[in-house]
Each structure stands twice: as structure tokens, then as C-alpha cells.
Length: 286
Image (cartoon, rainbow, N blue to C red; front, side):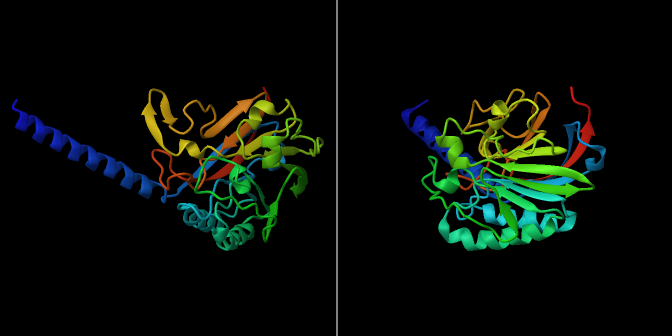
């Protein structure tokens, strides 16, 4: 091939590469705005039969003010208005930029009105401006209308005569205090014990028998993933064991939400934002 032929071939390859990259980016921008509404039946060991069928709407990682998280949260709340969950939960990284706080509060107040027995939230690392994302300035809201914002404390809800204890995790203490004990506020006599923690690694750190259920987020389902034998790999967290979905250890079940928003770049790839309606089902402990 002549030098001119090689030059033309290289130009064609470069243009094709640009088209491919542009197409992937365009797809990622669209994917980040298209909410997946998932109904998931979740077996919980020794769940009382009175709570069989209880529903929990699990949302996470809105990052309001950066990317499309507020838009997907609005879509999630519209769905919640249809399904009317027993409890609604948001597991951290609520507001990325202070300018979005007012809009986030308005959408969160709508969410609270959908939940029959209460809406609850915890903060995440980005709420405290802890992280590597230069586009998330952090805004740790201290209260929300209708949504009970938990730190290292517990709340009790009664459904059909059974007591449910929800324990929050202080996201900053998790990062800074090596002596922090997540289970300190726990009511160990409660019929269902739920931990709300931004970080999925909580499953490795809880003691056996403390919690029946952990709800976490943080990883965004990988946000930008590539196909791999046996599944997908999140490029931001290639070694993450708890990318998305359901995990279990010693009769504690954890659901990791893929989240609603984005960090760094406002797009997702093979990791759609998701609102998950968990339908709790009783099953024997192992």
C-alpha cells in the first residue's frame, strides 16, 4: 500500500473511532436518564409471617445538582405514587450541589407521601464532600419534610403487630472513626432489624444475628460497565464484590441499589438507574 493509501486508511479509522466513541457517549447520556422500575421478591430469613409481602421502595445516590439524578428521582416518585410502598428508603448521596437542595427537598416530600408507614434516609460520603468527584461539592442536609433522616440512631415502625427497627449509619463516622459500631442503637428484640448504610461493605462488618436486612448503595451499579465473562465489570470499581443486587452472609441479606444519579460524568453504560420495590418474603434461616 502506498503512503497516501495508508494515510487515507488511517483517516478513515480515526473517523470511525470518533463515531464509535460519540455513539457510546450518546448512548450513555440517554441510559442515565431512563429509569428502570424493578420489582424484586427478597427472601429474608426468619421474617415473621405477618410481614410476608411487606414492600420497601429502595432508592439511592441521587446526587441532586449533578447529572440526571433529580430527573430519575422524579420518575421513581411517580412510580411510588402508583405502588404505595409500606416503607421508602434513600441510602445516601442525596445532594451534590447546594443549588439543587430546594428541588431535592420538594421531590423527597412527595416521596414521603407515598409511603404507608414512613420514609427514611441516610447520608453518604458525597453529602459530606468526601470523595474524588470534583463536580460534587457536597451538601449535608439536616432535615427533610416527611422523610426521617437518620444518623447513628434508630426508628421503630409497627406493621400488623410486628416491630421493625431501622438503624441509620453516620456516613462520616464510618469513614473517620475506626471505633464506630453500627449496631449500637439497635433494638435486638425487634421482629425485623434493618440497617440503612450507604456503603455495601457493611455486610462484612455486621455481627451475625444483628440485622436481618441491609440496604446500601454507593457503587451506582458500576455506572460505566463493560461486558465480561460471567457478567459485567464496573470500570470505576473493577474489584468491587457488591456491585448491584442481592448478597447474603450468615442470614443477613443485603440489597445494593444501582442508584439514580451519576458522579464524575453524567452518563451510565450497562448500568441503568434503578428504583427497586423489594417485596419481603419469609424463609427459614440456614
